[in-house]
Image 1: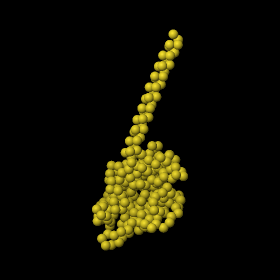
Image 2: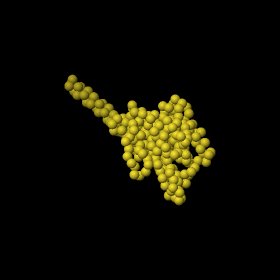
Image 3: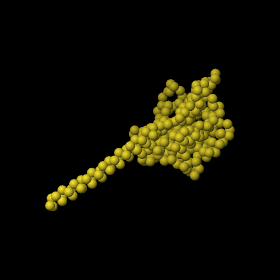
Image 4: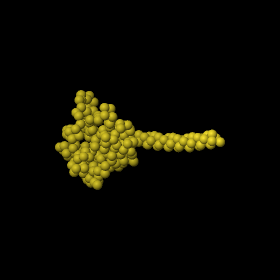
Length: 264
């Protein structure tokens, strides 16, 4: 089975939001009523149960030159998938193609995946009591099609293909790449972010370019705490079971002893 990736090229994205619209249309997601955002042009301002990806509009200065920078935000589809490890009912599936997918029919709304996610992506819907996020268009990928966002991009800022081939292609072309080997918590991500133009973005503030666009230097979440709590729960359950069995044995022994006394 081929492992796939999606490259997002910061240098060629024009912020048209065609990918954002395509995501809505393909997944049948409801439109959201929005209002003027005084802090910028990102709209909607955040992910939600009905908005699985957004285009973030960043602006600033590089030296004395003003610039626009557009960043696509959605699930990163981590190879280690901490959200899937956190789910107590196995409602999150990690596909060999690279997609990390929440099964709404299995989700119980516990929100452990939200706590485990290092990129603050999954969103809880209190109406359905389910959690939602980008699916990597796994239904399209498994039928030989590229994800909807990739198909819609007019400038080829999004490219879909075998993960390893994409990584080698952009490394060889001199691009900086984020996502190929993040850390032990995340592993690698199946969304790869690349740039040559903005490689020095954030340097004046002592940041790496990917930190300057919003990625944490060492992304982590609450998975260790969730697993520790789960292990404590299992241990307590085991102790309770042992206690119940011991009590049953003691009760039965007492009953036999009382019966023997009565018969005498």
